[in-house]
Picture 1 (cartoon, rainbow, N blue to C red):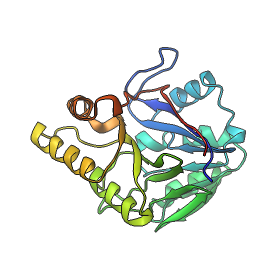
Picture 2: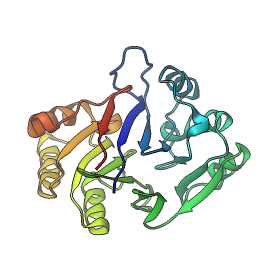
Picture 3: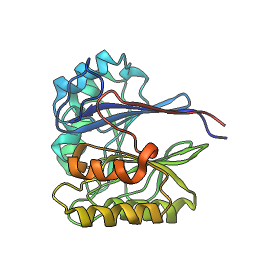
Length: 241
C-alpha cells in the first residue's frame, strides 16, 4: 500500500509561482501520506523562510529534514528551519562535515548519519551516500506509479543515481526531480545522458536548479508531455493506491 505523494518545490533558481522568491539553490517539501519531509533548505535563509510562509508550510509538522549534501546552496536555510521546527531528525551523509552536524544539534535537531540504503519513513528511503570527492544522497519515494527519485545536485551523476536506485529497489522509476548537474555539457553529452535515462526506463523528469537551461530544453524535447517544467512553487501530486 502506497500513500498519496505531493512534492512542492520550495526553493529554486527557476521561477514558477510569481508569489515566491527564486534564488540559486534547492529545497522541496515531500508529503507522503501523513508524513512531511523537507529535502534540503536552499541557500538563503530569508528566501527559504519567505517561501515557506507563503506556501503555508507548518514546519512543526515536518517530521524529518533530509540534506542531500553539505554545499551552501542546499543547507543555507537549515538554522532558521530548525528554529521553527520541533526537533526533527535530520538525515545527512555519514561523511558530512562535523560543523554541519553541530549546526543540527545546536538548532535542536537530531542528526542521523547515513551511509548506505536507509529507510526514513515507510516508502521513503535514502540511496545512501554516493560519489567520490563530493558525497551526496538522494531520496527515493515509492508511489503507486513507481519510484520518485529526488536529487539535490546529482554530483555522483544523474545516470549513476538512476542505476543505483534500480539496483536497490528492482522497481521502475516513474519520476526524477531536482538538480541534474548538466550545465556546461555539450548537446551530444546531454543527449547521451537522456538516452541512458530512457534506457533505464525513467518515465518522467522534472529537472531544475543546476541542470542548466540548455539541458532542460533538450529534456523537454526528448520527453515531451513527460517533461515537467519545474521551479519554485511547482506542485506535483500522485494519488494513493
